[in-house]
Image 1: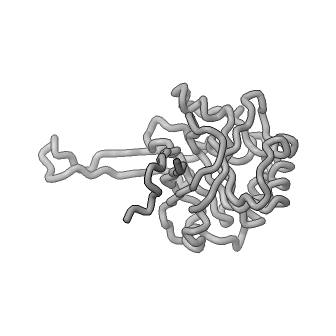
Image 2: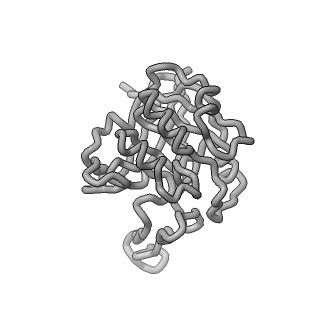
Image 3: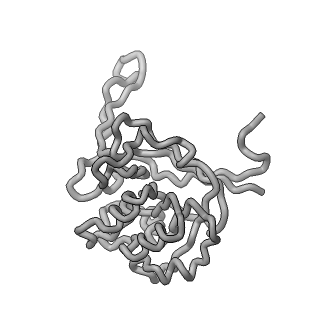
Amino acid sequence: MSLIPRGARIFDVTVPLSPDLPVWPGDPDIGVAPVARIAAGDDCNVSALSLSSHSGTHVDPPWHFIPGGATLDQIPPARWIGPCRVVAIPDAVASIEPEHLDAAVIPPGTERVLFKTANSALWRSGKLAFDEHYVALTPGAARWVVAHGIRLVGIDYLSIETYADETHETHRTLLGNDVLLIEGLNLTGIVAGEYTLVCLPLKLAGGDGAPARVLLLQEP
């Protein structure tokens, strides 16, 4: 018996890991180097990967910014899977403030929210150089998320906080209140509404984060 409802649509909102992807300034570039190749006479194809734990589509557990916070392997898989709401933020919004979240009319009891912003157009356009002007949550919006009982949020660029947030207040507010993060999503073509989120990060022992495969399921 299939675990996926009959007729459900599956959307892969993961960006493909490749050396062409932007990385956070100061992080190592993504590397995929050949170790063995059939074309070179080897028995099989094998590659060596080198990358930050926060490359491409990835997750942040509390320990990323909170001393003593839960590491990736300490988080139950069920936290990453379940009902989810995709919220479309107008393209004109440069930073997500509490008033934008009020306007989104997120139903009470919602535990997982993914924010679709103007960022997704960057993936669609093929603009892969790091863009400092991406859309993200302000500290005030982070406090709104915590106050409304949301337990997981995602964003369609490499960080949930603005590039100018040098104190990392947004990260500290969310992770310090056990709100899990998914960053680097590609929500191109995703319509706002209700989905089932399936996020499977690598089970990295003691991990401060890890790349993840992220799917959205939409029932017919």
